[in-house]
Each structure stands twice: as structure tokens, then as C-alpha cells.
Image (cartoon, rainbow, N blue to C red):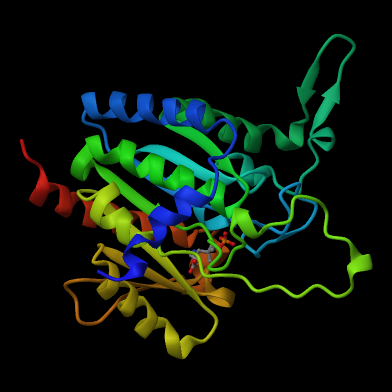
Length: 312
Ligand code: PAZ
């Protein structure tokens, strides 16, 4: 065993739990227990970017590009496919159903009457459709939010451990854009870094790889899907394969920053060649989202996995 094998344990010893951690874990616990009794499938979807604070009283932080598009869209498709969904997302990033209203001004959609407020004619159909779907699925959806990398990892660990009871009914879909670098709490200044001290140089240690304990210890019977983001097309397949070989989970979905909404490749343990999902120009025009195809594909794989693993 190398030092790296214990790095994740040191991370949790050195970085404090997020606020409201116990309350969130209690909700997750209840959600998983309830689903396990009913033998319902549960998908944990992680979504959005993690922040890396530079100060304990955080004024400044490092962030990344992710808006949570992939995660929030996928959550809707998993709900429609019959899953209970735990949506572990970056606070204020896109959320299932509400994402369709992003960039729209609610005040431009309403009419004020003398004694009531109604939706204007132009938005009736769109809002009714969204509201109906939301009403239909909201009981099957548990929303839990995070901001920083450390909050995310604490909640990921706790959720995966709570999902243990579900065995092969659990599916983990790790779409969040998680920082590879961070500043340990012990090395973070307490107060705002002063510019009067001169230019700022930063050395950020690597975040321990949490997929290893996730697969081996926290949720050993779950069906686990991770994402691999690259910007260099030549690296995509190799990096995705390397990740699968290293962590021994079930599927790695490779995507490129600029084509992620139209193209992904899926690497698994069985096929020699990765499976590709690519949206045609026609499908794009029709408003088809690549997440609908990703979820359909994963549902079929999870069906197979469940059939092979269920204990009775
Ligand atoms: O949130 P979004 O839809 O803009 O982006 C999704 C994504 C590219 C963050 C996701 O598909 C992904 O690749 N997540 C894993 C990133 C990584 O840590 O490699």
C-alpha cells in the first residue's frame, strides 16, 4: 500500500465538514432507506463546478466553467426513466426543470390583474408543461447543494455510503467538474489576503482521487459512471480508458469541452472499442439533448448490471 491509498482519509481529517452536513445526511439517509424498502432504483447525479477557497473567511476562490447543464438535464431523464434522483449540485447552478427558465425574466411572463397574477398567453403552454413535469417528479427528487470542493467531497462520501443499502439498485453519475487542486484548510489564511503584501503566488496540492475509495469502500455494489473532460481530442480515448483501468468502475464517459453537447464516447470493461453517441444536425434542430441518449444507454447497461447482481 502506498501513501496515496490513505490520502483520502487524511483529506477528511484535515478539512472540516460543511455546514448543515448532519441535516443533509439525515435527508439522504431517509431517501435511500425509503427507496431500498420499495426496491426503487436511485441515481446520484453530481453536477456543476466546485470552488477552491483561498481564505477561510472566503472573499476569493478559484472556480471552473461548469454551469451544471449536463447534470440538470440528465436528472430529468433519469426521473423520466423511473429513477429516484439525488441531485448533488453546486448552489445556484442549473437545476432540473428550472433550467428551462434560465435567462428568462419571470416578470415578463406574467399579467397583473386587479386581484390575481396570471401567466400571459404566450407562456401558458411552456410553463404548464414544465410545472406539470415538476409536480409529477418532485417527490422522487432530493436536492442537496454544495459550494466548495471540500463540501462536495464530504457530501459525496456520505451519499455514496448511504446508498450502500441499495446495492446494485444504486447508480452514481459523476458529472460535476471537480477541481484537481486545492488549498488544505490548515494552509489557508484566516482573513482576506492583502494586496499590500505584494503579488500572490499559489502552490496548490493535488486533491486525493476519491474514485478509488468510492468504488472499493463507500458504494462497492453500485453501478458507477464517471465523466472525463479533455480539451485535446487525441487524449480523450486513452485518458478515459486509463481512468477505467485505474478505478475498476463500470463506465467512463469521455467528452471534449467544445463538443460536449453533441458528442461523447463511452468506455466500459467489456468492449474493445468505445461506443459513441453523436447528435446529428437534425436532432439538434429538433431540440433533442444528448443527455436523453446518454441516460437511455446507461439505463440499459444498469438493467443488465442489476440482472447480474441482484441477490433476490
Ligand atoms: O456542466 P456542463 O454541462 O457545462 O459540463 C459538463 C462537464 C463537462 C463538466 C461534464 O460532462 C464532465 O465532463 N464532468 C467531469 C469533468 C472532469 O472532472 O473531468
